[in-house]
Image 1 (cartoon, one colour):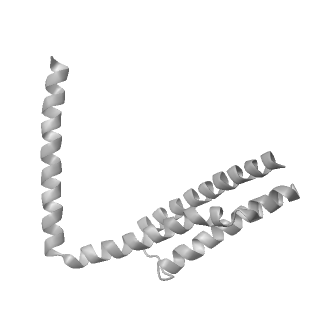
Image 2: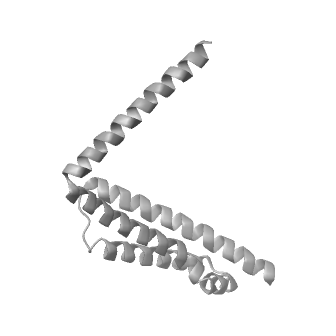
Length: 134
């Protein structure tokens, strides 16, 4: 009984918090439209960068295939570093070559780390497919 009562009351409290937060954010953006425009500009750049990061290793599927044939860890590391450098250059270009603020740098560095891991996983998948076909 207490668990059901806790879920009921917790659900009502959470709903009230979400309604108040939504209303407050709508009022904030209504009174400060420049913040909303800046938010959309940043969001467009982030989505463009994410799209680029996702497509890059798949669009260059022939590069991991050639690196696998060399059987060199150095070549594989150079390929992954190259992908990460291209990702970073595109990110800086989309940001207008300037990134300000500690929080922004932390988010950007986490994005680069995530892009590096994603590139590794995709290249590993492509390399396995090349090994299976040979």
